[in-house]
Length: 283
Image 1 (tube, rainbow, N blue to C red):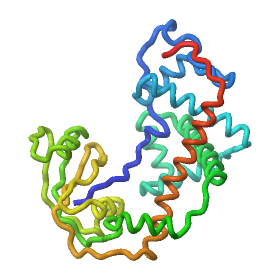
Image 2 (image 1 turned 90 degrees about the horizontal axis):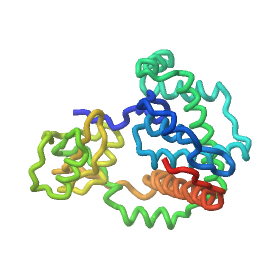
Image 3 (image 1 turned 180 degrees about the horizontal axis):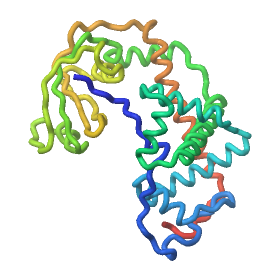
Image 4 (image 1 turned 60 degrees about the vertical axis):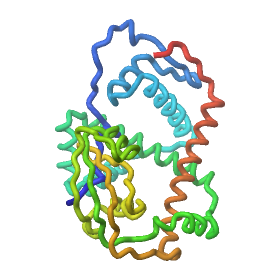
């Protein structure tokens, strides 16, 4: 049984516009002015419909994008066509298809390729911006911090050759969460299957998750298109511990990722608090 956790989600870079017909009066006008740059009600409704999120969430994201665009201009960050093509090529390779087939797959989802490439270009610019922010904020982590994490999370550094599990599958994430909270509860629309998974034959991220899940406990709920799955770990077989020396690089990467995200969020919270934001009309 192979559980695939890394499924390409095209929606994050481009998606079909799903905007309901709206009267001009509803979307006409400015919603927010941030540092003299307007965000119109139409922008909010368009983004909300495009990504199927609430108007408030859409407005928050658009405000963040305005801040990012301002910083990108200030720092003279640019992206050329070659970088965009290389990014798409790497995505195609990761999905075991050619770039031609990958772009045809984009088209088959009714996504405009030119618009998709603009989304990719914007993402690369944001990635460059984040890298600059992080390089200015991050401090080198010492061995003492890495060792402390290792000692506090020894279960994460034990590797089993195989796992005896019960796989819970549902199209509703809340169904699985309810079972986690009350294992004795009877929840409909949940499929159970007992199986054994060999560590070398499953997705490395799944193996990592099962290794970090205590025996006799449920794993976290994960998306496995088109459903949600979680695992009850009944047994871990042939468990071997990973030394600190072997785990050191992994720990550094994990802690660095967390610190980087925190540095980025703090950076933009500070920008937002100092920005001139005038709410003209809430969507």
